[in-house]
Amino acid sequence: MRYLFTWIACCLALTVFSAAPLEKNRWHDFEGLVADKATHLSVYVEDNGKIVGSFCYAGKKPEHTVQGLMEGERLQLSIMNGQKIVARFDARMTSSDADRMEGDWNNVETNDVFIVKLTYIASCGGDAKHRYTSIDLPDSVAEAFMQTAVTKILAKDKQWVVNHTFYPLETSLLGKKGITIRNAAQLLSLYDKVFYPAYLSRLRSVCFCGLFHNYRGLMVGRGELWIGQLPAGVGKTPRLVINGVVN
Image 1: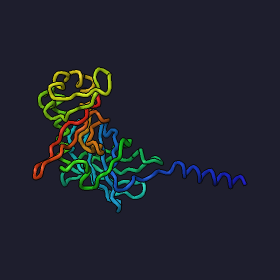
Image 2: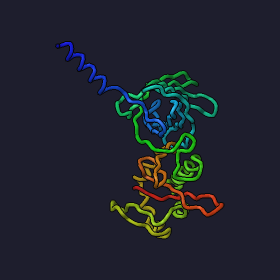
Image 3: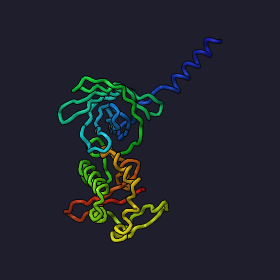
């Protein structure tokens, strides 16, 4: 009887602590450190286990694509710079709810190997070729606009920012939430109170690949800034604008 209880306990332990694979046909985003640098990894798993995605360092534009394969809870990823493999990440999911990833990161160019642990931050829809289905423009265009918007805000290019913002804009002011800014002139007059130093500091460390998106548009970081698409007339190119400032 004692052996039966021991066997049952072992089975329960394996059930509780068995790692779960990533859900297929969704984008999954992770962050962590690679060689002491803050990074962002975004992967999409197709039905056959094939993986596509992107990888970037914090504060940088998307520099690398990702290719690979998922078998169960294990992932074999190649980090690409164009057609060249610059790193390989042999990883596995290490939690029952697929929120942690761990493995050996091999820098192909230097032969350095690091143990890398990444933490899940978000998942969203889309497909392997078009992540940001809430807009009718290529993903690269959306990410480039987000980077431009953040760059302009950090540079205090006030005129560009107010001219590329959708109104009315809901934000916070001096700690008070639910403030409505109704036009460009009002945002210009309140600019330094909306985009204050602590907020700007948070923007400096965001990544521009693997942006979370939903019906509202795309967000960067923890939602500090949102962009969205204005309706386009017949035959016209959609226009992207800032449509949310969570400060």
